[in-house]
Length: 365
Ligand code: NAD
Ligand code: MN
Image 1: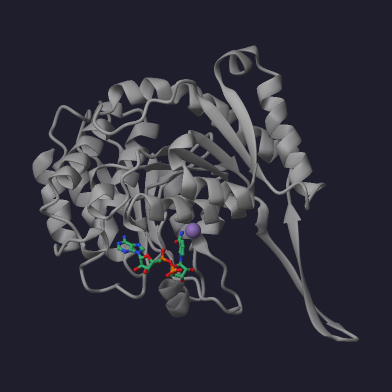
Image 2 (image 1 turned 135 degrees about the vertical axis):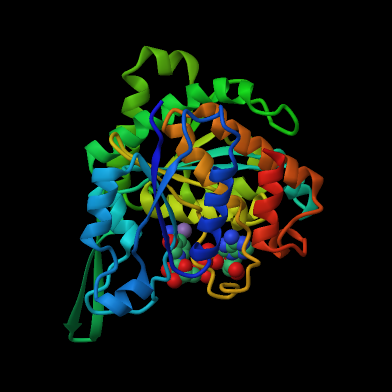
C-alpha cells in the first residue's frame, strides 16, 4: 500500500513540544497497522513565523498541504489579545482555506480523570461549526457622540449549519459502532444516540434562530435520524450549567463556532485537563488534527506539556484517513498509560515530562 503523507505544523509555544511527541508515536506504530511507514512534511505557520516573515500562514504551507499531504497535524498558535496589523490566526485561516467545516472534539473521561478528581463517566462528542459565526472577524470601530463603540458581525448560514448538522446526526449513529470497538472500561453506554443543539435563540432569534431551525430540519428530513437519534436543545448558558452538573447526560453536542469553542474548554476541565482533549478539523477533502488547547505560554519550553491531546489528535487523523486499526492502537496505548498513572505530566497530577509520556505511549503500542 501507499504511505500516508502527513503535514506537521507545530506553530508556537507547546505546539513545538507536543507535535514532535505525536510524531514519535506515529513513527513507533508497529508495521502491519499501516500499509507503510508514514512520511512527514515539516511546515511553517504561527505568530512567531509572522514576526519574522510578516505572514502567519505562508502560501507554501497551504500549497504543500493541498499538493503533497493526505492530512495534517497542527500544534497551537500564540495569537495576541491585541490587534496586530497584518496578522490573522493561521488556524482560523487553514479552516477556511481548506473548508474544514466541522471541528470534532471527543471529550471522554478515563483513568486520568480519576487521578484529577473527576469521577464521572463522560463520553461527549462536541461538534463545533468551524467556518463562520463571529470568526468571520468582521469588526468595526466607530466614533460616536458618546465615545467609541465597536460592532462585530456574526454570520450563520443555512449551508454551514446544515452540513455540521448532518455530521452531528451521522456521527451520533456511528458512535454506537465506535463504542463497540473501544475498550469497555469506564465507557458509558447511552441507551439511544442523542444530539443536543446549542443556541441562544431566545436572544439571537435571527442568527441562532436560523441555526436551530436548520439543524432541527436535518433531523426532521431523515427517517433514519428520526427513528434512531433523539434530538434536544439547550440554551448555551444552561448547557454549561447542565454539563457541569450532569456531564454524563450528553452524547453528541452540536454548536455554532464560538459557543462550541467555549463549551469544549469547559468540558476539558471535567475530564481533568485541556492537555487530554483532541480534535479533528474535518472537511470533505481534507482533515487536520489539532489539540483543543492553545500554545500555553505559561508552561512552554519546559518539556512539561501534556502531549496526550496531540497524540490523540494524531489518532483522530488516522481514523479519518481510514486507518482505524492504527488509530485504535494509539487510543488504547494512551488509555493504558493513563490507567497505569505512573507516567503523567503535572497538569494531571504527575511529575513526568512530555518526552517521557510520549515514550510511555510508544512502549504500550
Ligand atoms: P491555553 O489552552 O494555551 O492554556 C490554558 C491553560 O491550560 C494554561 O494554564 C495552560 O498551561 C494549560 N494547558 C493547555 N494545554 C496544556 C497541555 N497540553 N498540557 C498541560 N497544560 C496545558 O489557552 P490560553 O492560555 O488562553 O492561550 C494561550 C495562547 O494560545 C493565546 O495566544 C491564544 O490565542 C492561543 N490559543 C490558540 C489556540 C489554537 O491554536 N487553536 C487555541 C486556544 C488558544
Ligand atoms: Mn479554544
